[in-house]
Amino acid sequence: MPGLNRNQMAWRAAQDIADGSVVNLGIGIPVLASDHLPAGRDVFFQSENGVIGVGPAAAADRIEPDLVDAGSRKITLRPGGCVIDSVWAFAMIRGGHIDVTILGGFEVAANGDFANWDSRIPNKGPLVGGAMDLAACARATWVIMEHNTRKGGPRLLAACTLPLTAMRCVSRVYTDIAVVDVTEAGFVARELVPDVSADDLRARTGAPIALAPDCRPLAAPALPA
Amino acid sequence: MAIDKRVATAAAAMEDVGDGATVFITGFGGAGFANVLIRALCECGPRDLTLVVNSATHPASLTHELIAAGLVRKVIASAGRGRDPGLSVFETLLRDGKIEFECVPQGTFAERIRAGGAGIPAFFTPVGFGTDLTRGKETRQLAGRDCVLETAITGDLALVRADLADRYGNLVFKYAQMNFGPAMATAAKLTVAEVREARDEAIPPERVQVPGVFVDRVLAVGA
Image (cartoon, rainbow over all chains, first blue to last red; front, side):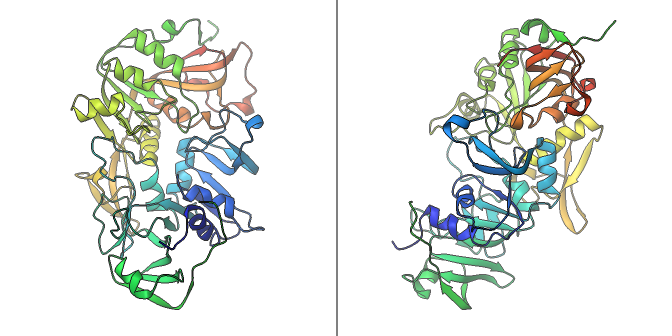
């Protein structure tokens, strides 16, 4: 099936991160976006365990055991970075000081409703972490996810079927085949991979989706999956 | 008598902890787990505990030993899912209805503890509105947003991991060890810190991250 791989989806989202912004990246594909930031953009990545200014992963001989991000990765701090406590970290999130959060997702509805925390795995305990705080309170919430489920069902829907993370919070979705804005009028595709037709896109989306008048081809450099 | 909050043994650190206690435990993202104190609490053996801990199942935390020992009645956390495909001890008990679980968005979790330590009984937040985690809670529209009422959490015991302490109980953390430590230290009746080093001399005032006023006992455990 034609489309972007995980790193290419993260790359595409990274191109939209504005210079000077404060960004929180979710676990999984979103955290890869920090590796693909265009040169010259000075950005602070926040991690909800209190790290402000997450830098690249620590080299094996430079690991500080207590310098980790929310996903337990051994990291470095960028110049100007610092570490604060959880209360302050979430004041930053809940107080609207995060310009954009990029999160993994299961479902996004045409009104911006978002489901990413409970996929109803039988018997596994629930895990919400900071997802509800980020989705409800970041100044913008973007989602990176495959356009369709493994069984081929749509993830962009008229209404979410899985438990909600937050209501009316998502403004943009990066999938393996399209960049989709969530607008007052519903889904609008801004970019679409060349091998997927408008009809294919509509067939693979679970709610009406319009093509922007200036809809462009979605392309990314070759990157390892 | 000159203040000295340092205790010599893990058993002394757990003195007077009783059944039914609500226990805060620090640690998140692979840093700041109070594992020596968790094991000491396990050996001390109080029952019917309520744990307030970010994750019920984090692999780097010994929280699971308390749960496996059958000492825990309820867990309040933002994460209750193990990383392994199989079920953790906690998930097995949860499935069988043998342990209670309250799943809380992490920022609400932090703020409920902060509120508990700051004498604020409850607060409104937009986080979680319209989701399964706030079903049945009082709601109100404030500042143009739908909000839910969340109540403070206070407790009997806080187990806090830090890097450095002095005899006064002042604490310094290393990097992301800090996480829930400062908030939890304020919200418990008895706060015990385990640290790499507990000094006789005072920590320079500008370095103190948790004032000793919030800390009752300090146990040096080395690296």
